[in-house]
Length: 116
Length: 114
Image 1 (tube, rainbow over the protein chains, first blue to last red):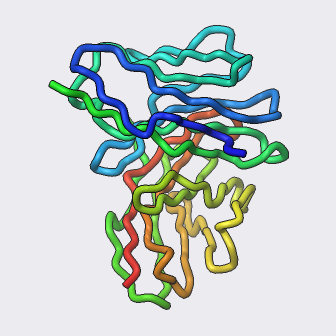
Image 2: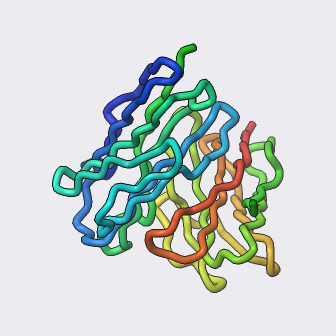
């Protein structure tokens, strides 16, 4: 079974609109972390936001927020007021303890294109 | 803002040759990682390193690979007897602590095996 699922291979959004990128995960570890990274066409990996499994509130970081629904095992990234520079690949990742699986596993990614 | 730096940005090597990819993690970070991303595919964990030894490694990280922290700043990934399928982007990352801490990535080294 896939540890991280990102069901949207590609998404389009109009500039200044909000967009939600989906991520669902699978783990038996009670203490895990969820991360989102952005990879522009230039190739670097940029950390965006983190959510711990025990965090009571959804994480926010500027225009990025995480819609964390623990019971559904989903951690969707919400980008508000999209900008042209947001066009990139977005990866959801999970950190779980080694006895539960892999150290740090990435999803297949969603390519976001922001339209002017 | 401190960052992870990787050199070279692009490495071209003949099949069968050895290659060393270099990384300088963020100075106060204690945990170091290598990942690879084959073109168009997802990022795959290779190895984590702490206190001068490997703490975890994936199935990909076989005897062909080794890591080393030769001095107080550098963290290297050595790939022996390279194969065509080793062509990928290799990312180094570091974090302050293990567990649920964000890992900060370098810009990657694109390795091309001919």
